[in-house]
Amino acid sequence: MNGKAPLVVVGDALLDRDLTGRAERLAPDAPVPVVDDYGERTRPGGAALTAYLAARDGREVTLVAGVGDDPASRELRRLLEPWVTLVPLPLTGPLPEKSRVLAADRPVARLDRGSGRAREATDRARETVRAAPAVLVSDYGRGTADVLRDVLAARPPLLWDPHPRGGPPVPGTRLVTPAEKEALALAPDGATPRRNLTAAAHSAAALVRHWKAAAVAVTLGARGALLSYGEHPLLVPASAAHHGDSCGAGDRFAATAAGLLADGALVGEAVEAAVAAATDFVGAGGAGALPRPDAALPPPDGDDPFALADRIRTAHGTVVAAGGCFDLLHAGHVGLLQAARGLGDCLVVCVNSDASVRRRKGAGRPVNPLADRVRVLRALACVDAVAVFDEDTPERLLADLRPDVWVKGGDYAAADLPEAALLEEWGGQAVLLPYLDGRSSTSMLERAAEGTR
View (cartoon, rainbow, N blue to C red):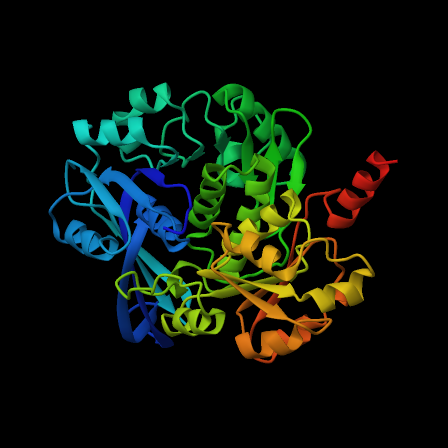
């Protein structure tokens, strides 16, 4: 699976259903809208959505969840089969279903049914968790985390996504990701119910101590996330404010952060990338706009970046491109590219030719010739293809590639992104991602030169 670390998701699976139509009149017998000509679409929900999103990132994913043999369970199995390895736990009743009625893409009503809870752990589930290189827990309070709590406590997960009906994360969890409302409600020492940064910071610090977690990231919706290790918090702002369908944004955040932690990223890097991924997810329409799980997405093929982009678009996936010289590949580059890959279904890296680098950086650059730079980039698990351009800027290449998202490091200003207007021509979006402070090829060369004097 493209060299990415495998991930085991432990949690409560749901079946989500959207009934979408148009509402142009009220019912004659009650002041409620009449939704006409509605269509029905099902998708994985709860922990199953988290697992599905991680799998769409190109990762090998195993889901440990309560799934039975009722109609909803059978539909969920069908949706997950091409993407996720399922380790089912027995249920006490039918799989929970969540049905949204939407008109003009806005929820009108929600209908819930199915009371099934995970009844007990199985030997296969226990062994799967024990042997997992990385574990994400998505606890919706329907028993899965409870019946496996002893195994989870023995090997604390990388990430625990809590919900109000669930239990506390096991001590030693590396990152816990409550939403703002959940953090305020779960904080043990009487945090103010007001939703502001002070309350979120107070709650996050209290929860780090109460849960004995390494870190807590409180997700703040359009404002980003607040990361706390128990002291002064780090605010990771969202790059844009989207007011679309936020359904599934928390699952997108958790899947991205856990995947990057599994790949070796630092907690701060993982949270920054998760904020960007969740923001882009909402901007693209949320869970309701995802390609159908049962519509197979072709595996990325790095031989031809243009053919790769065409295949991903044909499957209704998202093509991401990032650009730069990448002369001396360093931690800032790697963090940027990992975060960029989390925004879509493939990542094409656009690299300056040797002549282009020389014009931009001056004599003596690049230090590494193009063939070496391309080889190193292709070796990164987060890179699906590499394309080379000889001009000073990649506009001509981007016009041919037509990515959905164009990524640059956060040390650029908006005025330095001439590609932004170009992407608007086909509905693409240019975004800035946070860049590791102090990491650059130029500063590395300067330090090396000082060391030789």
